Length: 411
Image (cartoon, rainbow, N blue to C red; front, side):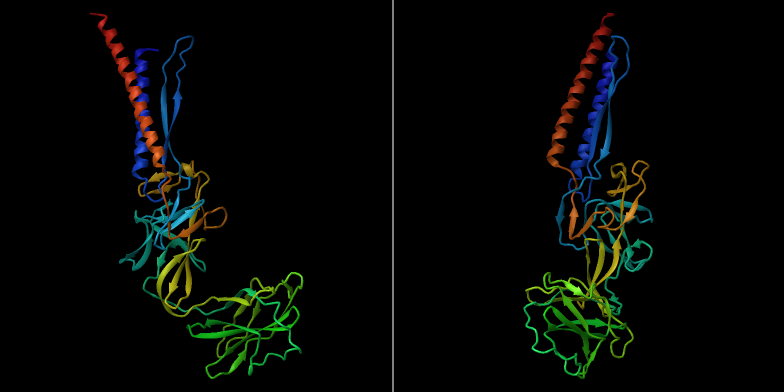
């Protein structure tokens, strides 16, 4: 190996350790950056073929890669618009110029754009979150109806989830008479408030009456302000399996369509969830869609990325579903300013979807993903790089001294 070769090898070693130290410094500086993905520097040899017994000095090459696919720890926050991704995927965001990018940094805040007269969800780098409007439509930047009155929506579905009818309820001595709207009676009653197209509320009552062992009757009715009760459709009889406590007939149970409410044309479908007859108390979880006209007071984000407006009336209205993207090789994405990424040939093109579906992770509201930097590890790497750089500089210094000796031979 020539002296010049030793000098070149030492220089390549110092450059490689310098690159590693730069990556370590970047990682330490961004330890508290939301969604930051650490950089690692890997070394590989570059060997020159000298032939025979001669040794040809080589060098060392360094290559930087990002651990983009590595999950960071998730910590809770007090803001509902802080969103963390648990698992695979990236938020699809839009820069101020309309360009598309991808990020794991979910610290979004509401920001009003006076020119567009719209309120967007924007992260600290100014990127706007995109999503698909609930009910269909093209993906767009999410525009929150802050300070607005949500338009009313008519109820078209009532869901009876976890309807538990007590098997211990005594059966009647004689078969009960048919449901009488003028004198409605039952063993149990549950009420749910529904709305018409202009937001007018109406209470629908669900009556449950035991007919015989393992047999119940369900009736639906509404009572007007003057006390007049109107039955909404016919009676539904449910028979349970005495061994399992689950519905025997009809199977499946529902859905059923109720008659239109008095003075209205909208019909309501009733869907049934887990209907049982166990040795337990009566339970009926009645839900419905639709809402009155009411001001928006807050927002929340579900685990499937659904963004809902919370109304002053207490109702929630789903308005958007945040779009997500995934890549075949996420670690090959190009890192851009603002803690965002763009695809490369090596990463593959983005595959779009939504949280909780088709291999995408779930979203968590009121939480942020921390960087995946381990400070103790980075400080260890820093010491190693410092010592490696120092050792290579000693090799260079020794080579330089040997070169001086060679030059001085002429004197």
